[in-house]
Length: 118
Ligand code: SF4
Image (cartoon, rainbow, N blue to C red; front, side):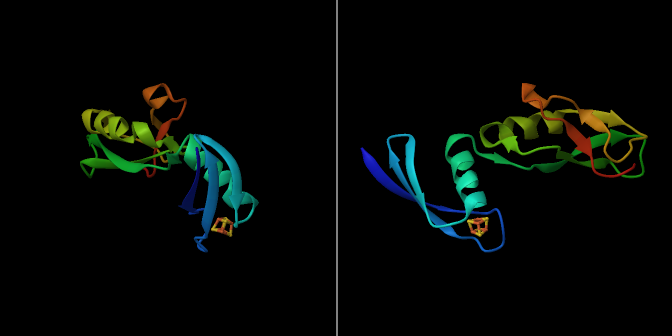
């Protein structure tokens, strides 16, 4: 069955609304927007991902929490599980900016890294 869906592109500050013509799960046509927007819609409708920033507990540092983030956009459906994993873990100081604190998080191939020295 053919349907039309509107997707707001968040790739740049313009925030265009793109019209997506679908047949079931297949994308037939994307109207409006630029090339980047079309790639965004393809990704968003097949494998949505987001950058994630959070904190993990750190032992022996000035502050109790170390800011961390995903090195690449993380699968949206696994973000809740990632947050639980980050909440459960603890690292030891010293930690350097860019240091991997959780490699291959949830078998996604995406590392979680420290965003500051501590
Ligand atoms: S479609 Fe292109 S111009 Fe519009 S918000 Fe997306 S990236 Fe920006």
